[in-house]
Length: 274
Image (tube, rainbow, N blue to C red; front, side, top):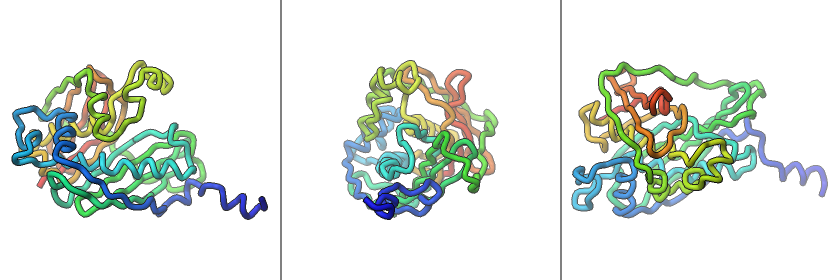
């Protein structure tokens, strides 16, 4: 093997990933999938429009499960170890409501790579005619090449004009993983211990889905009227714990935060509704 061939086999440097095409995917789902997702993020049985096929409307955050393939595809490039990556933040912009069932054509690309000093952040965009989702992936120990640090994270707490609590069912991580994210850290105690957790943790996107559904009440809107959503994942939470969700009107729409006891779970949250 000559030097040229060996260099060609090397994965691209992290800063060179910007604009990398992650390909396309056709996501197919049924009414059953949409109803299962709604139940997994705490929709009560009496919210028939979310859990009953007669007049079913799909929660916007379900789209985030459809785009997760792009995060996996980015990790497979080889420029970083996906097992050492963390889902740090999430953004979602809706263009129109998802159908009750059907197919969604998705394209993925690496939109940005930020140099955070001792770490790096990779923004992965997934686009469709229904939504754009941006998954921000934190890479410890991967920064320091002198690149752009990117926008500062918003960590302010909203005023507590509205408050709600939600106890996470003990089986919630086992239920939510059936919506598509089957990482063993959410179900296998040995794997969770290997990651430094006492027990399996809940999916961050499940916590975000619960919050997005709940704060629609704070905005006096239907949860399917969500048009924009963003939040930072501050800490993991475990099934059996109780979430405290606070929200208030702000410059970015309805601003919110989520705590589990004294621990901040989601911060810098904001949502807009039609």
